[in-house]
Image (cartoon, rainbow, N blue to C red; front, side):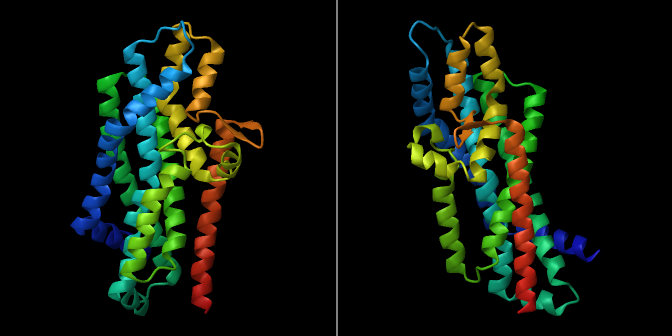
Length: 296
């Protein structure tokens, strides 16, 4: 009952804080506008350059390809950056002194830590699913090749990446205790995560050495899973239109739907297993850090 009450309290405070909630909700929408405005042409040019001469592609299929890449990029970023924003309540409780009051009350430290995590997951999922809905409307307006199964798989990907983003933000936020630290971490994550996860620019465009480094990062595989399911219908349509398999495979590699680890192709099931394992490890580390702080 205490855990349920703490989760309800944290979620309520998140939605009550208009600044925090509005920022979390508006960020994906701003990203969608920016991506469509600035990255849309870049993605279109990149796609056209990957098509061999002599193969005709309809404008509708090109737009759908770019649309799938755009929404997968937005979701890959938002599932982590929004989690950091939602999880700031943990730090704000330290800044305001509310955490000291909660520790005086008969609430175990472990219950408090878990409540922050679950509440952040819940709040982040609401924002990211809303962003996904907006993305679907955009894709429907430019070219629709998704199936119901694709949408369900993307929802599963969102949940998994949100769990990862929340676990990562929980570990980092444990060590923050001032408003300045909150701003610094938020700025770094917002500016840098999209690059290292391959959302802003496909990892296939990076140098070989950097590709090997990024192949160890779980965010890379979260982005790839979202890309695979957001663009699966497009690739199927390409094959139905007579695209050679090697052309489709080349396009999939160019947008990170196919990833390689130490020279070996990583299957979708392996990506899921790796992400799930990382989530469990991060949650275990989060619990261990809180237990160690308690012992001290």
